[in-house]
Amino acid sequence: MTPRPTYGIILAVGCERDSANRRLNGKGNVAAKQGQSRLAQIECWKRRRETLILTGAERWYVVRSRPRQEARAQFHLLQQGFPTFLPLMMKTVRRARKLRDVCGAIFPTYIFVVLDLGRDRWRTVNGTFGVASLVMAGEGPARVPIGVVEQLLDYTDDDGLVRFDRSLCVGQSVRVTAGPFANAIGCLERLDSNGRVRVLLDIMGGKVPALLDRSALEAA
Image 1 (cartoon, rainbow, N blue to C red):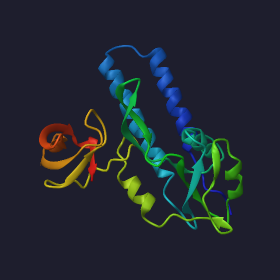
Image 2: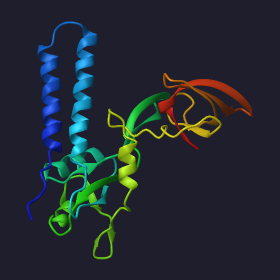
Image 3: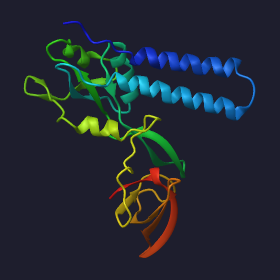
């Protein structure tokens, strides 16, 4: 069978080249440049996302990367023509006694990969730089249940980040995922059309009201 075309690595290189050209040659208003960069980023993710639609006998499988090498493993898998999806979200971490918001893997050391076991030389995945091994079930790779990756992709925004706040509703118990209140639990009291929410956080034995961005919450 003819392998499916995979454009992930081409798009990644193209986007980086476009970004570099804008930095070298771009003039004018800074806000305009940022707007162009934002549009290019959105367009890149949209085209990348098209390569993650399953066709024929393709299914999703799981690759385990080496510690803190998810991005490296994904890069080299893309170079070999394997479509991949590394779910990312904004997280708050403490570094040098300071809280910082960083983009990190939702499932550290795990990457989803598209394979057709009857077409692809899937054993080469295990020899890829940054990869520890495919997750196996007996003699073959373990298939991801239908709908799991698809739902994660459905929750992914234009920046390629997974957003778990889409199904939030007033009165729901929520957990803060980013910012100074990261990991605090509270009750969602109000939503507005601008993406801001009011949450009553359970802190120090009391209810503390806080205005947060909706993207910083997930269902508890």
